[in-house]
Image 1 (cartoon, rainbow, N blue to C red):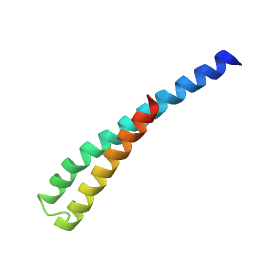
Image 2: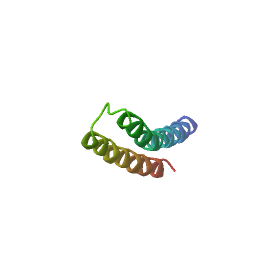
Image 3: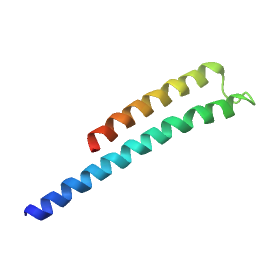
Amino acid sequence: MGLRHRGWIANRGFRMKSLGRAGQLLGLTLPCLAVLLQLPEVITQGQMLVMLVAAVCCFAIGRIIEGYGN
């Protein structure tokens, strides 16, 4: 049980780190997407602002999750 348990814990840390990095990546791509959608006026400026706030939240939460994975 000892080795199996250690492997599961190490795998969980890797999963949390990967999930955190995915959240950060989403947080970095949302502003680009928001700007690209706002240029041809597909979305309004208010919707773009909401997307930017969501991007900051995704990045921050992803950073926290990645920190727990270490």
